[in-house]
Image (cartoon, rainbow, N blue to C red; front, side, top):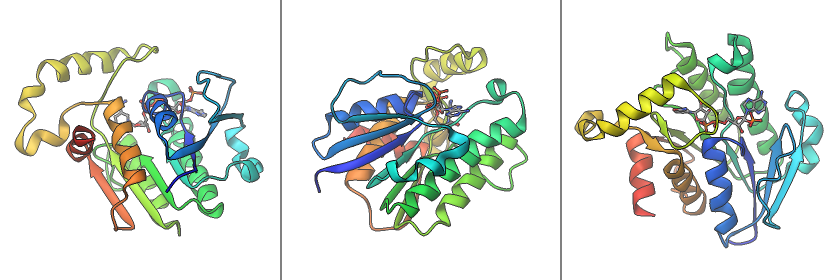
Length: 224
Ligand SMILES: NC(=O)c1ccc[n+]([C@@H]2O[C@H](COP(=O)([O-])OP(=O)(O)OC[C@H]3O[C@@H](n4cnc5c(N)ncnc54)[C@H](OP(=O)(O)O)[C@@H]3O)[C@@H](O)[C@H]2O)c1
């Protein structure tokens, strides 16, 4: 396996940026396509092809969105989106459209960042939408789908998220409490999620559909 093309949706985010850095370092990935909504030019590698797209009309760019492996780490927060509809548009509609195009374009493997607690029947809107996107992507005909359900993401954000910053301080200080059945709730570095995703893209298991809980993501990252 060499000369692969990857596409990363959400490449400007906490996990997305880490993913792109790792893909640039990988000898297996030769081309990395980054659909973004504004010019970024954060990465200078010749492997990178940044494409400014209108996410509401993603299918119009279909011909230029062909890749072997598709990473989807798009997402917003209710605080930023300001309405359920706007949140749904990013976390479900854009992610679903990206996955559908990947499938139609022959991507053999879609790797999605979802979240701890994703469940179509959840009373929590965030978790319900995460469950719905998982269900949608798992139902596509793509050869292989890997879903990653991290707990709270640790890492340095440029953007200020007050509640999240407090939670991160708590999770960092009391990480020793998260053992046994609680281990899946332990916070995880964005970098570790990205590491596990790249590893699974290079050394996929046989199963066509798989879900990694947060502690399983951590275990993969720790062994890489
Ligand atoms: N935060 C947590 O603790 C946590 C925990 C578990 C799971 N997750 C999930 O993990 C995934 C990745 O999280 P993250 O923290 O790495 O994400 P992030 O830093 O918030 O980045 C989100 C990405 O989505 C893009 N995006 C947001 N709104 C968009 C819009 N309207 N149109 C186009 N692109 C848009 C952003 O692009 P721009 O730069 O253009 O905005 C960015 O690339 C998300 O699905 C999140 O829900 C998060």
